[in-house]
Length: 435
Image 1 (cartoon, rainbow, N blue to C red):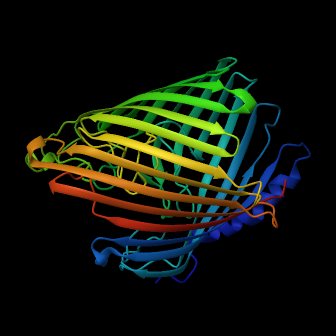
Image 2: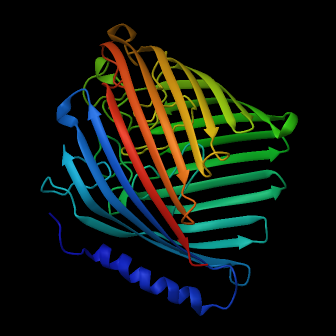
Image 3: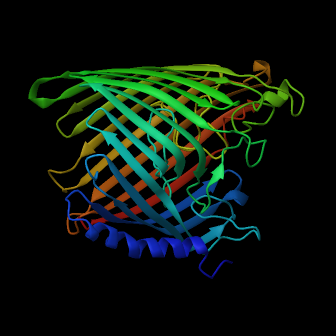
C-alpha cells in the first residue's frame, strides 16, 4: 500500500496554506474560499458474488476563487484529496484507486482546478486551465469522493438577455479516483488516442420557455448532438407543470471508432473483425412530464432508441446521460429499446425540516443486439430510492442515502444490458465557506 505522502498530496497541502494568503492579500470584495468534506460509502452486490465490494473514503476539496481584478481578470485554485477509510471484497477502481501492485492507494491528492478567468463586461467570459465542466453532453461527475475535472478552455458569450452561447475544448482530464491528468482515450487505444473533446452550444431561457442545443466532438471517435426544449405551466397556488422533450444522436466519427473501442455498450464484434473500423448511428428521443403540487412531486417519462446511444465520450467517462430515463447502474440506452419511467417525491418540511425523499422506477423493453439484432434481446429495470436530509443542527451539513436495484432478463448478447446488481450509497457532505 502507498503510505508516504506523494508530491501531489504535498501540493494539495501547500495549496491549503497558500490559498488563504492569496485571499486576504487583496482588499476587494468577492473572494470565495470554501472547504468541502465528503464521507462516502458504497456497498455493492452483484449477481456474481466475486464482484461484491464495499469502499469507504473521505474526500476533501479546498476551493479558492478570486474576484475579477480591474473587472477583467481573476483566477481559481483547488486542491482535492481522497483518503481510504475502509474496503472489502473485490479490489477495483470505484471510489478508490488501485495501484500497480493490485492494492488500493491509502490516499492521493492533486491540484484539480487551476485556472485563469477573463471577462469583458457582461458579454464575454473565458476560463483557461484545469476546471469543472457541466453542460448537456459533458459533465464533471459528482457521484464519488471528488469530481473529475478537465484541462483546456471554455467560454460563454451572452449577446442578449436570455440567450447564452458557450463552448469548450479540453485535451486532458483527471478521473474521480485518480491523482493524475491524462489524455483522452478509447477503451481500445489505451492512454492517448483522442486529441481533444470539444463542444459548442446555445441556451435560451425566457419566461416559461427553455431551449438548449449542443454539439460535441470527441476527435476521430464520436460526435453527438442534443436538442432539448421545455415549457413550464404555472398553475394555481404556485403549482407548476413542466413538459420537456429532447432528441439526442451519437455517431461514429473517424479512425478511432474500431471494434471494442466502446466495449461496454456495443456488440460490434458480432459483425466486424477484431480491430476493424466499426460504425454506429444511434438516436434517442424522450418526453418528460414533471408536476409539482405543494410538497409533492410527480413525474413520468418515455424514451425510444433507434440504434445504441453511446453515453461515454471517451473511456472512463461518466455522468453525461441526458435522458430522464437513463439508469444509474446501467445506461439503459440500447438499440430498439423503449423506456418508461415514473417517479414520486415528497418534501417533509412540515414534519421534518430539511428532509426530502424520491422514488423512481425505470423499465426498458425490446433492447436488441446493436449490430446483429437476431443475436440478442433483453429487458431491464431499475428501482431507485433517494433520501436527502439537510441536517438543521449544523449549517452546511447534508446526508444522502441512495438505494439502487437493477435487474435484467437477457437472451444472447446485448453488451449494454448488465447482470443484476444492488447498490447502497451513503454521502455525508459538509461545506464551510470562509467568505
